[in-house]
Length: 112
Image 1 (cartoon, helix red, strand yellow):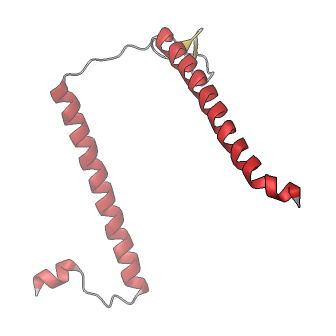
Image 2 (cartoon, helix red, strand yellow):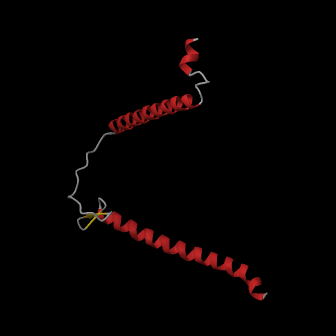
Image 3 (cartoon, helix red, strand yellow):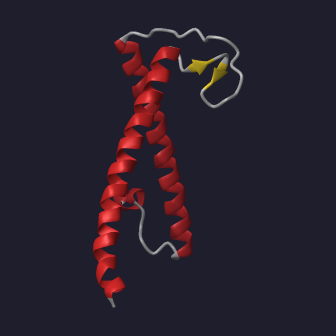
């Protein structure tokens, strides 16, 4: 019975100590990795990218102004919204045919 009594306290003590040791090791590994990335500049190491594949050399990056960046982001969002709307319409049509089209669509309600 004495083994059962000490189990809970030992378990929690081990969990706390393990959490502390794991946190410290994780912080050390993360800081070392951040240092490697900042030293590499563009995220490449010895002619290889971070995923281990050979890199084709340094890429030229094009600097965009803030207004150009905002415009590209706006266009991208508009495209994604259009895709979502099209997908919603397709699902609505599929569900309407499954349910026997008992609910009128918004365009049907507007025309009345």
